[in-house]
Length: 196
Image 1 (cartoon, rainbow, N blue to C red):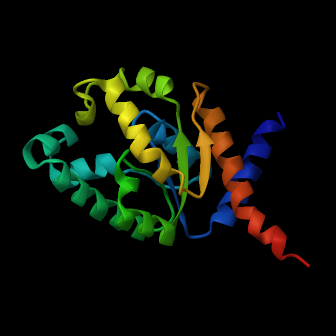
Image 2: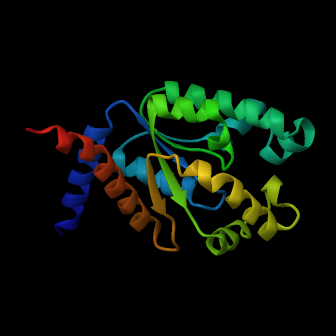
């Protein structure tokens, strides 16, 4: 029975440390950004936004349709604009698409208005998860090879995130607890060094 009040205190502590910044989740498709993000937002009493959903709404078509009709460069351009707009809206939990953080412009926008959390998952975990859905345009042919190549390209850039949390096959609420603890440790660390 004491676990729930502790969780509330922990969430309140994070909200205090976070201030007006958004919590931005980055990582590969299948890392759990949307599912963890929704639960994290609920726990912190913050709005949740999924950049891919916002892009689809703005474009009036699905991401596979955007890729097919306009190409990946047009999608990436729209993605940058949508993420920048969302970050201006005030504190929230924002789940980004797998390639969003590869944009230097998007990384700068996140750094200016957010705290970036990389949900890092191993290839086998990602493969298990992405095979459940068939709406991933980059994975139409050779999902394993494509994911391995994307990991090689993206992981060094994702490593620039403020916080890294390993995404395992554990209950989502356990992942949320881990993210909150990692964020508190990150945000509280500079303050502890300033005390005299």
